[in-house]
Amino acid sequence: MSEDIERLEIKISYLESAIAELNEVVVSQAKEMRHLSLWVEKLERKVEDLIEESGEARPNRRPPHY
Figure (cartoon, rainbow, N blue to C red):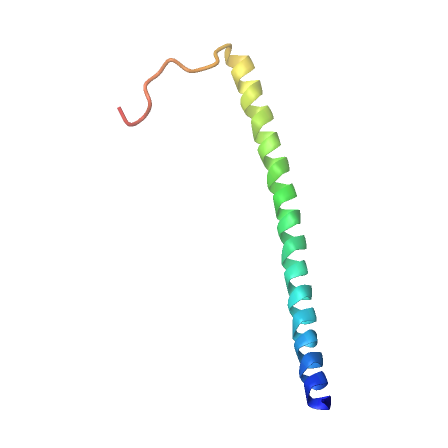
């Protein structure tokens, strides 16, 4: 009986460690996603400003692969 409890305690310990590591990954990814979202918003604003400055929604030129 005590061996079963000890085995369960060991498993719980490993699971707690794995959860802590996964939490660190999730937090890190959330920060990175926020950073990337802000970067995309900034780029969108720049593109909108460039479109407004040029007065055209689409440039009238051929794509580079032609």
